Length: 201
Image (cartoon, rainbow, N blue to C red; front, side, top):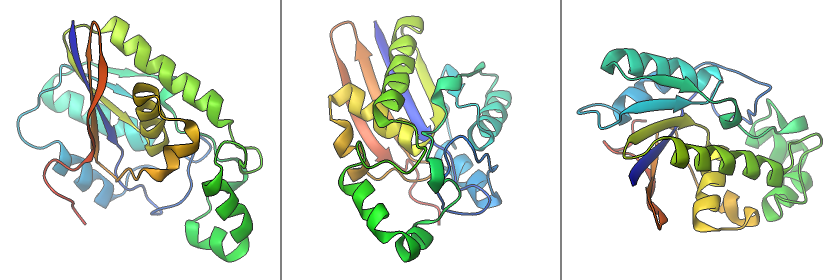
């Protein structure tokens, strides 16, 4: 068994950078589409595409699948972590109006969740389940998973056994690719937050 799984974060959505979980489903902006096409240009190594159900992911997944005749599967458990009362807020707004809450979250994202947010351990469990199922289902393939920053952080934590308290210390750029390699005896991180053709600003 030898499996490669590339997780790509969606490009910039309409409305720019703000906290989006599953409650807000903004589509990709023109810039976001350009970022995704830029990161996946050239020879395509993937055998199939797995995507979050949110439009900022699945629209591009279906487009890329059609361009290269690749099967596309939508996986509901790849949706982003729910941010509760932070949904729709920007970092700047939170720092201006709820700075103590903002800093408490990043100091302890497990126990200092925004009101109504999805528990981080439950989120990690569903992301780990998806990864494990991919490993069991697709042998000797090269998958592209179109997902979210939180999903990529949680999957990174699952594979490397990094605690959830440390996940938000890792940046995940729009349209960046994180690769995992899986064999019968080993799961490992190959690279993290890679922009294959350089950043597109």
